[in-house]
Amino acid sequence: MKAPAVPAVTGRTHSWDLSTGVDGPGTRFVLFVSGCPLRCLYCANPDTWHMRDGRETSVDEVMAEIGRYRDFVTTAGGGVTITGGEPLLQPAFTGSLLRRCKEAGLHTALDTSGFLGERASDELLADTDLVLLDIKAFHAPTYRRLTGARLAPTLGFATRLDRLDVPVYIRYVLVPGLTDDPSAIDGLGAFLAGLGNVDRVDVLPFHKLGAHKYDALGIDFPLRGTPVPDPALTERVRGQFREHGLRAV
Ligand code: SF4
Image (cartoon, rainbow, N blue to C red; front, side, top):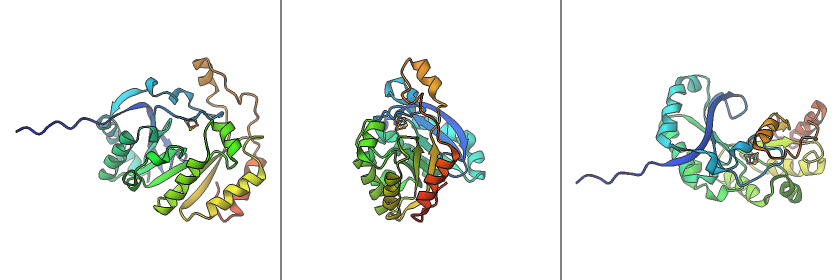
């Protein structure tokens, strides 16, 4: 008797690209998935917010595309990064991709806000070599104002990743007047120093490179009038994390 066909795992994707230096170690194949439950005021990818705008894509199709760049990303010490949007909005698709990448011997990174961390199974996280965890603020009301969501799930996910010993790069977007409060940054530094799995903290200066996407979508870019941080402010914040023994770049 013929075995029943296994349904192909599919997800909604926005695009893929190659990048170096910002999405994990080495040169990466970066997959942008569609759909995100957050609405960060500084989001540079508002065109990924809705799953319905993404393209139905099978895991096989993504793996075939990754295969075209395999030598390129592996010789450069890189791998595959799944970002978005929010990859954990589609945990079956993301988990299947991570599994296939591991089977193919590729380094895997998952870029997430952690808000949906409970949707990530231990198996999915076992297939993840590195989590790029965006902790967007450490003061719950600021986090709510910035993202529209609760901070607690992200901190809970950070603690779980420590328990599971999954290496993490923390990403912190620095916005003048919004996420530059010294005491909140000290609080985050102390929290991170208490974890044993934080390899580094990326302090990312807020930028407005995604502003044209808001124009194209006909929606307001709320931080259009907000200045980008000057280098001295960025260095001050990196210094604050370093005072907690963290590697901040
Ligand atoms: S979590 Fe990322 S994709 Fe979602 S709104 Fe925030 S910045 Fe944009």
